[in-house]
Length: 144
Image (tube, rainbow, N blue to C red; front, side):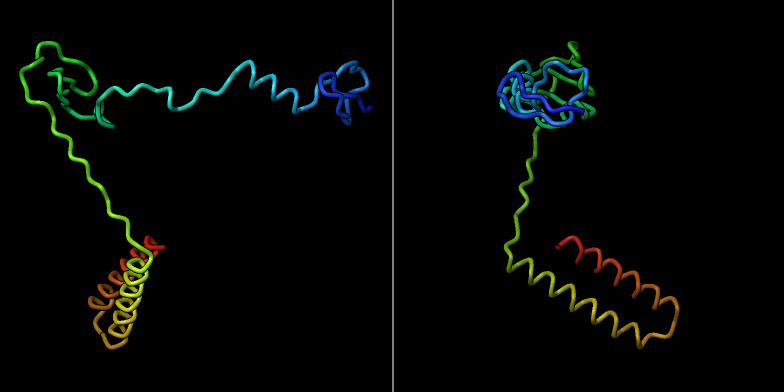
């Protein structure tokens, strides 16, 4: 093994093969790759004007009257149906205080259920309480 200098920038490249005459360091190699194959940005994608998952719907009618069934255009149904209404649901993000209050409520519910579990004697009720506790624990883990 020998050490050679990079052909482009002159940096030392360690552990080169004994038969090697010229070498290129990893930095220069990556620069040449990026020059030859530049990364395309996601902004380059053109929007179709259709909602997400339109091709997965059983039937989707675009605002221009074109009818699609599972993403395949049906010419014979064009301009025969009303455009599909898209319902956009915006989920409200909880603040830190609201999350903490919800967390504390669930913890208190679990404590109450555990107290109730100690007093119960029938297996049916014990199993129901255990199920409720596990459901609350799942809810709690989702809040973290």
